[in-house]
Amino acid sequence: MLTGLEPAHIACPYCGETIEVLIDCSVPHQVYIEDCQVCCRPICFEVTVDESGVPSVLVSHENE
Image (cartoon, rainbow, N blue to C red; front, side, top):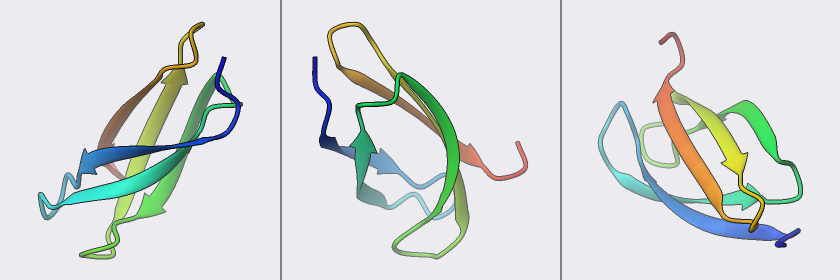
């Protein structure tokens, strides 16, 4: 099981740019907001880490 930070590439739901984010795999489920590194708009992240330690990342607009 992974317990560190894992890089993930996501597409910003606002500007469409692909950005790299670090996912904390020590937390099985988390929801948080992080600003896009390109357009600075708030992205809502929902991260789930499965039993094998593989993260799944869903992103959306802040108000969706």
